[in-house]
Length: 190
Image (cartoon, rainbow, N blue to C red; front, top):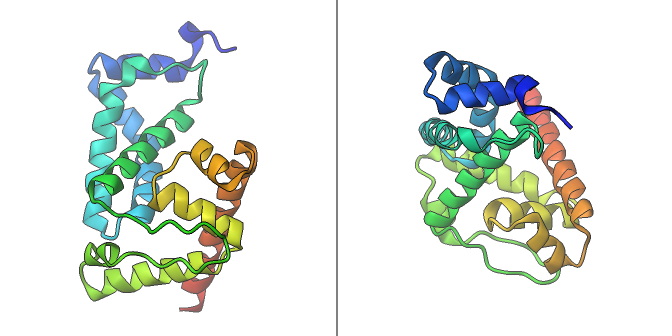
């Protein structure tokens, strides 16, 4: 167990909570690129990803005094707040995916999702992402869609798919790794 007084991450977050500008800048320097990468994967446009980064850091600043190093590493906490914000944002945009019970059924997005994508380049990027998702193994595809497009928690997904939460976590992790690998492979070919 990490003693709070000696934990540099806890000290940083306490400084952020007290509006120390140097601490806020340090937090951004450490995690800005990570938050941007996560936001850019879920936002159809660069400007939306940049807006999401700003909002996430406002949330980090507002909740800095609640950071507990005994419960999670600072990087984990930042990712959780980022993910929660992005899921909330998707929910507010009323992006809904039709429920499919069997994993074998082909998943297709509702027209609303494509309606949020502006410009041919963004639409092509979105379609390429959906093609990569469609190429995943069925369980990985089901977990990824439920987590990122429906905004379900890992526990909810586990219950729905009758799988342990640990299995859902590792499946989601493997799915994200595969998506990244495919994206890199496609970029190197282009």
